[in-house]
Image (cartoon, rainbow, N blue to C red; front, side):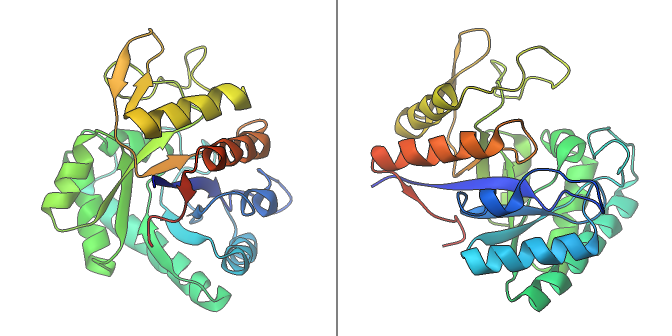
Length: 253
């Protein structure tokens, strides 16, 4: 039987400012990408989300980012490789400590936002990220865009890699995501999204925004926790996968 991991970006609230519905999403997904304070998240809120993830039996990953709270981590930054390496180690270490107290553990790393997009093609920042993960715990898996160069680069360095597809994002014919600046980049129809993902899992194909077909293998599917209607989208997707007999389980298993 086919199986897939469902993940979502959580722990992104900050003080009195609320982002998403972590409690509801943790009842749907199998893995949670937890913010590490650089783009979102405060220690108290992160600890609370980690405790809820542990109680729900949801796997936990470090959602590392550029230091960009104002831009929510979505602004590209020319961070020197040595600085980026230290930033990533710092973020993973902080989340590992909170996770230990919460009764769970960090089992993978997923870059966030602009960092995710910047390293997809490989290069010096990608190498810095890989070096940081290997330095702190080579047993951590790296989640990256399905079909991207970073996965091969990380695999060659000895890391376990997880290819990720996005349920609520439109694709370019190249397999890259359509920029959030473009109209139609974010999808909102739960039924359409669910059917797209079922088709992807069953055929290894997804339709790009221009109607062309992209070959894509995915080990995990992301539903953004900050998207409007995120819980409804994730719930409908989970229902459709179960209807098709597709098992939902953390890739860490």
